[in-house]
Image (cartoon, rainbow, N blue to C red; front, side):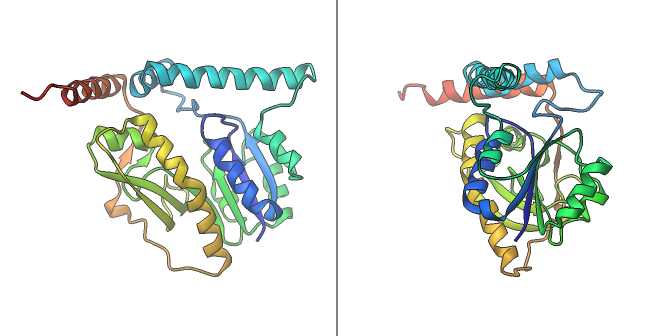
Amino acid sequence: MKIFIITMDDPIQTNGFIKEIIKSRKDDIIGLAVPNGDRLTIGKRKSKINYLISLLFIMGFYHFLKNSIKLALFKMRKFVAYRFKFGDSPSILKYAEKQGIETYEIKSPNERKFLEKLKSLNPDVIINQSQCFLKKDLLAIPKLGVLNRHNSLLPKNRGRLSPFWVLYKGEKETGVSIHFVEEEIDSGNIIVQKKIKVEKKDNFNSLVQKCYEKAPQAMLEALDKLEQGYFDFLENDDSQATYNSIPTLKQAVKFRLSRIFILFKNHQPIN
């Protein structure tokens, strides 16, 4: 099976997930591309400042600061390695190169030059973990399809920050879905799902961590099924779908207050 990966260069969770796929299927991976954009890539009409403040409330100060420092150090090391040729770059591109995988830095996966290169490589499967919306010309290239990892039990909770919305809505379970990519958001038949029970002690950070612990296993299982000719997929039923957008600042504040209340309630002495 010939696998091509399109991914963002994200040290928080995504790079670890991609590395696990590379470790297990290195001989099958024919290329890896990183387009422009990262987790903070949002719609042009949305405020990035409001989004960052919302993430602060959603994650809590400690985890927000921890991830911010991790991201800043990551970018600094990349810059120093590139600009001054000092030390190894922590980039997923550099990691892939060390594994003998051809890499590509691109503006968009939908640009014509990149599409022509993909066609020449003739992949069976493309794994997409970028923040880009993939257009039909790219989706038509791989023989078996384009795969995505999504942190929810599709068709519920399509869209952004699914672990947040699971907690916000008080749902009792979530999970990871590996599904085919279509032009609509988080649509396409589901190949593998892994369920996760939402515990009372779970917060946004712990739920994200649980999802990413399941994600490599789920993706590798999906690749194995496709390789073996498995086509008994789960329907990603549009009529059962729920959709989430980026939380508003008001929703993020409400969520943080509710978590503080739950924490306080659970530590009340028993009379």
